[in-house]
Image 1: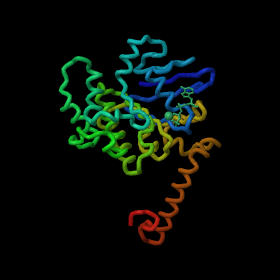
Image 2: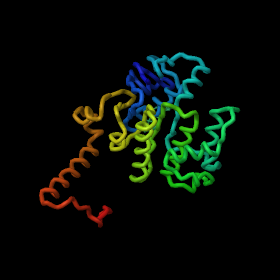
Image 3: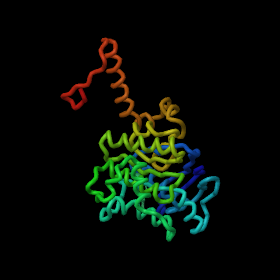
Length: 273
Ligand SMILES: Nc1ncnc2c1ncn2[C@@H]1O[C@H](COP(=O)(O)OP(=O)(O)OP(=O)(O)O)[C@@H](O)[C@H]1O
Ligand SMILES: [Mg+2]
């Protein structure tokens, strides 16, 4: 469905991506992980045709899009919905206008019943349709991200969704609602997706496959299960905080169950009693 084959990309002579290859199967979610500046968003920009590779090829639905013209790009792009880093809503427009604008732009002059369609997409992302007249700054960060996802869906109901750090800056519960929504769009609507993140637990929640970048190079491509057993210095260092947290949690759980009591959280340290 989506494939990068040996893609090189540079800006002003600086290599940003080097020999990047990975693929995303239809109806599956691939997570691109990596430190800040490793080239994750650049991969999405190449996929949207905003940048073009210096070498290598990009395939979408079996078509080599590397050298296609602008009008073919418009058609390919119309199959993709993008959820930008930070959500990026128009803050002077209401929720309904943000979603409705995408709908009208995608449908051109065709007759569309905007308000019912907007309400449909708000419901689809788990937002109450009464929010249609709110301004973005009257919503929580998590709700704004969901509006951004509704907007991406409203623009042409794309089969491919690209999420750039959809949970960054959200509290754990709001982040969980977003990852649940991403999983739901895959399982119930068959969407193919790429989610860019540097949050490892979120990555494990949604990923069918993972691609890890280090300074523009792919250092891992495979299933989440395969990642667990990889041991290279970079991957070990990258996963270390996650493994430490998981190890501590499971040791605590084992100790508590050995004592015959359920694991207890400490209210003084912010846990739920
Ligand atoms: N327009 C540009 N001009 C020059 N350098 C750029 C440009 N866009 C990106 N870069 C560089 O390319 C590299 C990769 O950027 P990219 O935005 O893809 O990183 P990222 O992995 O998405 O990082 P983050 O997690 O911070 O969003 C960075 O070193 C960045 O400085
Ligand atoms: Mg980025």
